[in-house]
Length: 460
Image (tube, rainbow, N blue to C red; front, side, top):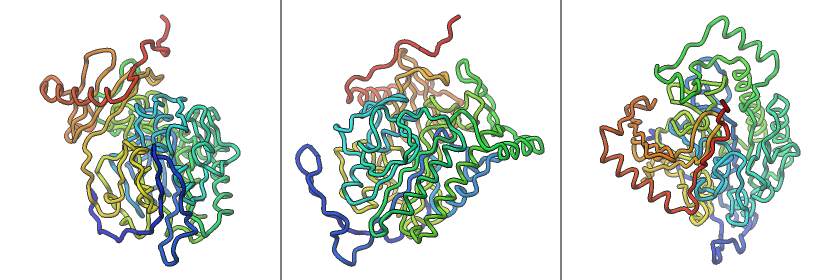
């Protein structure tokens, strides 16, 4: 729930012509609108890689420093229950662009792909509606390219596979490419800039002086755990308990500094007031390697426990979102597509963004959506220790199904957000009802399968 005023939502009209099969026939360009209509908003979307729910100061980190993103939250809306579509990167990235759950678009694991001929992406829709579209950074959606998904301008060093090793130079290169795009755009046309950083993905690398800063900080004031106890391991993997890695902290600051440069450029050009800024992560923080701790949330990247799927989300839209507000309503990756279409005054495309809802009434007026159920499907083994799994959340109850077995876990997130107490045995009727509902959801998609071989299993 959000507590704030209900500002007037910008309304401007675009004619959208749909033909059979849900495809575009033609669009009236933005330049052809009647005089006097409000200008459509620019969209600046930052996507971090492996940034966990507790990895920013505004989300409670006491070791990492993120002054720019903290200020962005203070001037906008911060979500406390923002979820990703998947526990790993590629499926989430595909879901942002398609508005579809991984079980529907078919990219269920990192390195997976989607077929551009079978959907009309967010980028393509905005491009065809007159937006100047730009992509920079880590793409990582198989063999598809940003150009195929509607991005006219693509930064030279953007990577399709995501194999570019994370280092300070790649973060700065992505930032510089974005600044160059913003400096050459047509000021009379709106833009959609989708900026995908490699940070804070491993390997952990940043400038030596920044790493030294956090080494000294750790020595002077050793960090402590957020608790609770009982989450020290997941299966056979140690689960990091403390945020204390100097290199990771340096990467968070480097990411924050890069965002600052882009926001400063936006303000200097006078575009800040009419720009929707979104900051989000592709999955939870990697906690089963020496990266970060997601406590008090359980586990991290690769897992369907909260630490693997709950992430930071900040949205700023001056004049439409009350500064300094917090939203506790659960939202997910598929919601960006319909939300941004409505914010831009464009017609919804329900055959495309089938699994998302527009959050515009929520973020501008505080009107909670009717949706109460969320689903996750990760039918793979993961190097972080997870095994094929599915999950669903209905209200505050979360059911986890470990594929290949009949074992379920049930948690009440309203009283147990750390998922410490499995209540499945004491609530068998609820488990049966939720399991039946989850099965019906699974059966609505073809080829719901899971891996039978664990390629990460060590030979003994």
